[in-house]
Length: 134
Image (tube, rainbow, N blue to C red; front, side, top):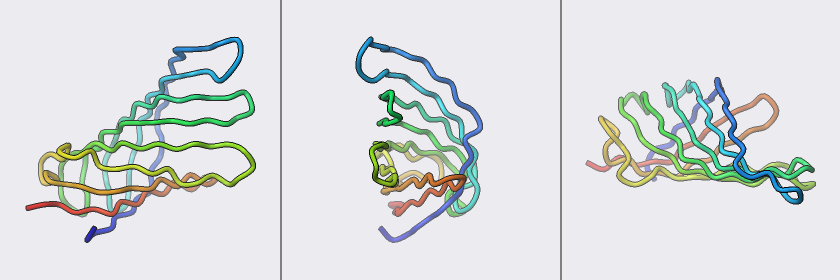
């Protein structure tokens, strides 16, 4: 990947919908999160997450997230697919994901890339290694 972008983000909304709450085992929820971005990415996004949450605080998720705004000064939109697991005694690993191929619109048409999400305390840092074809 020829370019790297980084941005901070704030989650500004969260709505949770339980869809499975068994007597034993982890609960399953569908979450919707809204974010605001600043840095090499400027704009807003909405993500839908499917999550598994254990009573001990362990969790895992998969998400699809649509970003709309600018990336490196180019205006458009694209979709990210990302996931992570959390829990146990190990420190949290960054979430990883990809730009969904063919999802780029506007000046971001042809965007491909791989991303990481770091959540550590109050720090929220996103990094994207990317290319834009054409």
